Length: 94
Image (cartoon, rainbow, N blue to C red):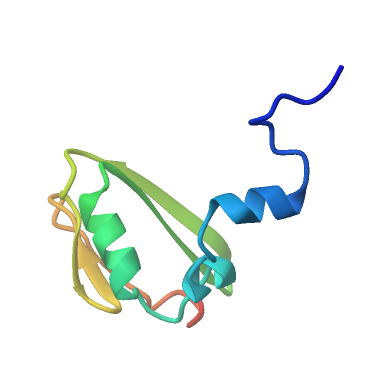
């Protein structure tokens, strides 16, 4: 059975369908909240803030209407719960 004309059967065909990803998408981490991530976080109805420190990994999921999280600076955000979060417990590349 031959592949359908629209089937993607190799990496080259897949790459031809999409633009090259931005560098931050390839790296998957940034030392601070970059503008592209800020826009994504502020538009999302769900976020999971994770940090890594001497005691291990901590991840705190939160959800509400889109826009419930505000990123105030590259290292500080808050949500309606009144809990401000900072990178103080996390290693710089979280």
